Structure formats: structure tokens, C-alpha cells
Image (cartoon, rainbow, N blue to C red; front, side, top):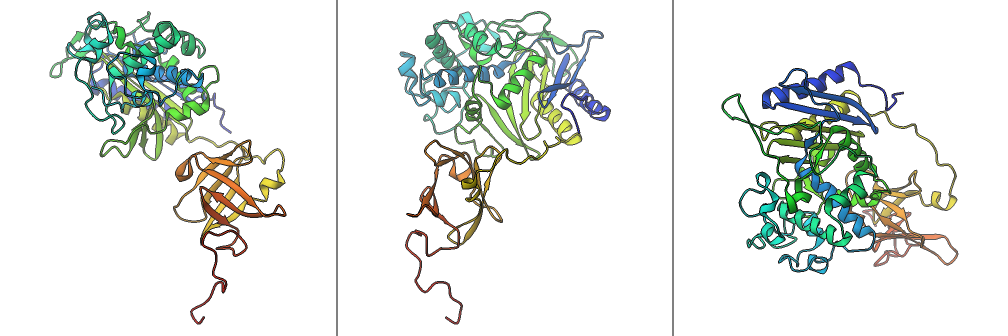
Length: 460
């Protein structure tokens, strides 16, 4: 049996090194650093550099750009979980006078508020934040570009507003709240708003010649919640472990799962991915990758995690463009997941039998469509079509004896067991749909009733 702490096979390690070496060489990046985590354990670190003897390691900081947004989103969700706000609240309720107060916090988190993608000139990523001392300087007079809630339109100023909201709610700077509520609890001591040695320098590489130009590393001021952070591969893999399962010291698993759900209709053609609440989700080679990418002048970064494979990967490059780091990090996940597939945990029976739940399992019919109801290892229920595609869902128990759908068509819908006067089960009610033990069972409360003559053949 494979232990999570076992090293990767030599062939897998070579494939990982070959992938980042190719990316660094073909993308012409001064350096490239990457790391892979499997089942919560770091199993590989690699780097390439143009300077002999100065390759970055797991403790070298790179700027992570818009990966910062995921941290900001976590801070907003924490405020919601404490009851200090609701994601349906208009911004004006908590941060008056911005000029964008009608948009909701949910829309800001999911980039569906209709705000502009960038702040007014000059280019905010390459100029001091002191040039934009107030929120009005960040938003400008461009107004809403799209009707709020109707489409995904990525907005850096939107996350500036969320950062200001966090500061107003906590009475402390965004950086201070971030340190106290995320970085320290998760042990991310090498993640910071300002660069801390050892760190990479940011470079631009000429598109038509092998020469370089240093990029400025500006303090982004109010725009910091959209892209300020510096981090390391080691720290971002700690963050990946948090995004995989949640951590009650920071954000519960349920709230982290909420961040992964689609926040707005995808753009035409974006059927293979969506944006949640501060998280990007993509479908690739049959697996779902969760994370975020980031860029600032001189730096590119990506973090992807596959829950199905329990594999996470981080990739950094200190170049403005040329390296598709999102593709590199995704490819690292692919290499490990395909070369060394996850070995399932041993099957184990439930610790005890719940006779009442066990009696509910087995076939149920929606009209004439057969479905199977299973009791899951967490004492929930799972309803799936017996064969072929169709509506299905997992359900978790409520204190009142009902179950609520967790996914699929029945997400949020209530499943009830309807009993006869003697306590026996008559049918299951799922969002008004009646499921019976036999197709159109005449003894059950089937809507519209069942013909008294019953089933018949052609000769009848």
C-alpha cells in the first residue's frame, strides 16, 4: 500500500523536472519554481534558473498576483460566517459612499458586479498605490459596464472594494487581518504583502531577443487585496491543503465548498470552467482543478488542486509573460495523477447498523423510472438512477428527520419520508416528486391517482 509520505517514483520525478525545464527554456523565464503535494504531503520540489548556483527553492518568495484574491475572499466569508454580513447585502450597507453600493457582496466575490476590469490610468500594476489614495481613484467614473449579476466580468477594483469592506468591519488593515486570520493559523509565515528575502526579482524578457529588463515591484496601496502578496511554493501548498478540506480555525469545509460553486453564468465557450467566490474551477482531462492563477509585471503564479486525485501543484516564474504557468501547474497534477494514481482507502462497513435507515435503501420509482437509494458512510443518503443518466443527488440529514440535497438537480431540495398511520413508509417526497416502492404503487399517494384496473397488456 502506498504511504502519502513516500517519494514519487524516479520516472515521475523525471517527468516533473522535464516539464518545468521545458517551460523555463521555451518560455525564457529567468527562473521557474514548482512543487507538488499528494495526500497532504509535499512529495516533490523542482526549479530551473539561468544563473548557475542560484536556483530558487521552496522558501524563495515570488509575487503571486491575483492568487491574493482567494485570500481576500476567505476573509469575507469569515465575516459572513460570524453573522456580520450576508453575501446578498448591497455593498452600501457596510461601505457607504463608494458609488458602487448597489452591487452585492456575492457579485463582487464572483466578478459579476459589472464593474470595470482595471482602475483608471496609469496602469495600476506598474505604478505606486499612492497615485490612487481613495476608492474614487480606484473606481473612476466608468460606472457599471454590465448589468450586475448577469455575466462574469473579471474586476480588480471589485476586490479593492472587498478589501476596504474587510478593513471597515475589522477596524484594522487588510494586511493585519490577513496575518491574524489566515496566515498565522495556517503556518504561512513566508507569505507577506512586501517581499522578504530570499525572494526572486521580477523581469521582462524582450520578445525578439534574449535580453532582460527589471520590472518595478510597487506597493499597490488600496489595490493590495486584488494582487499584492508574495509567497513560496511551501506556503501555497499549505493553502492548497486548506482549500481541499477547510480548517475550522480559518473557514469551515462547508464554506470552502461554497467558494467552489459557480457564482455567475460562464462566458460563451467557457463550458469547461467557471469562477466561484474567489476561486477558479476548470475541467481538464476528466478531472476538476480548483485554485487560481496570478500575474503582476515580472511574475506569474498558479495553484491547482485535484480533489479526486488529492494532488496539488504550484508553479512560479519571475517573468512578465512567456510561460503559461497555469498550464504548467495543471500538467504537474496530471503527471502525478496519471503516473501514480491515488490508491483508495480500504472499504470498511459502517460502525453500527441503523435499521430504520437501512429499511429505506434499495429501489424506488419515480413514476416508472427506477432509482436506487443508498446509505452512505457518513450516514447520509444517495439517490441515483438505476441505469443511464438522470437526476440524482447526495443528501445529508437534518435534525427534524428530513434530508437536504447537497448537489445535482436536487441541491437544496428536501427529501421526506411520508408514513402511513401505522408507521410504515408510504412514499418518499422529494421536492413534491413522489417515489414509491413499486412503479405507480396504488397503495401510495401518487399524484393524480392510479387507474383502478391497473397494468394491462395489448389484448386488454
